[in-house]
Amino acid sequence: MPALRSVLADVAETGGFRRVAYDTRGAAAAFRALGGVFAELVARRIERGSD
Image (tube, rainbow, N blue to C red; front, side, top):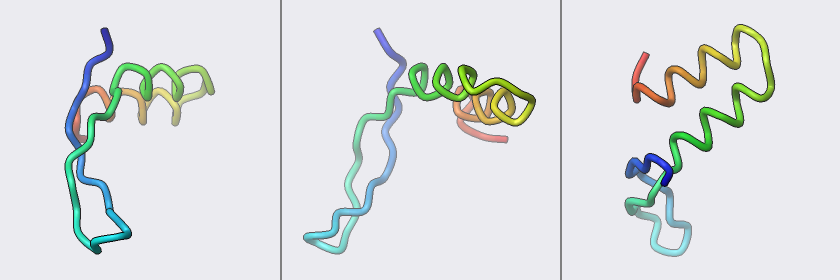
């Protein structure tokens, strides 16, 4: 089961924001698949939710 975190998303119809689920494990894995130092940095940031 993926780790999910709620994030704010812009809702164009209302001009407001709403919370949506975000697959942190999937996003981190996708960045790692790119390879390189920057991709690993971004993957760790996604997993921690901060710098």
